[in-house]
Length: 355
Image 1 (cartoon, rainbow, N blue to C red):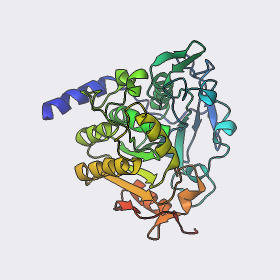
Image 2 (cartoon, rainbow, N blue to C red):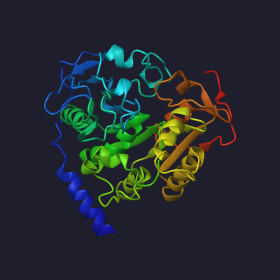
Image 3 (cartoon, rainbow, N blue to C red):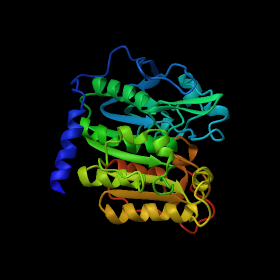
Image 4 (cartoon, rainbow, N blue to C red):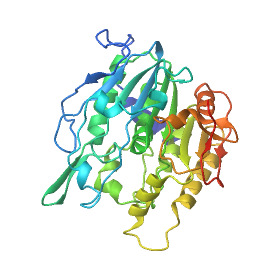
């Protein structure tokens, strides 16, 4: 096993972009989201230009890499509508309604001083695709998530080369993008404290979900290097990170009745037929596996209610379990303070504690 991990580490390090030991570029405007259009092979599912956003931070040693959410599609039915003509708007278009960690005026925001790279989502492939698929004669989707994310990451590696603390995170589909690219970020910054947080997406899907091959997701998957498409789940990436990078904290948030995750899970099992477990059963099994395999590294916060995601919502400051607000739990986790796995398994509604 040690030999396998050594080989994997060598492969990951071979992909590392040389670090630029310098401060972020002087031409980034402070206290705002700067727009970067990388060009090259990037692009959105509607053929429009891809762009990402960067914001300098007051603390030059800390960086957040955030993958935006926004669903996914894998056939003519799910790819109809918004996914067919999706592009990236202005920072106001994409972040104007965001709150939570994007509320830079809130004194409780533990990420207010972090520099941030925001990777928009416009490819309907949970940031992992590398294929253009014709779903019908009139519907072709460019699942270009890998090229887009890689362009943003390469820029971040070059501009934020000397950071000491990094949060890799994302909400909904972006939570999958975060874990997918986290091994690369960890290899890129071997001396930094890298934390991975998945918001509102535990990855519950049937084993060997064929959609991942439709997107050509396995072509660029770094960990695990021996992924079997017949049995693969997102937990395999978390477990592989745990084996290779046990020093980096991992965590997730979800709710017990997340309507969005339940809907997408139900869609994912349609082609398999009856007899599949309910989402709540699979969700708990996924979290049980990670908590048991990574007892010192992985933590979960499972609130009551039906809310989908928390990081960019007001609930970041008010949702609680047994009186412990998520913002308090998250801030402690971010600061490497001891936190417990909290699951409100019998809660029909979210517990709200006014800040």
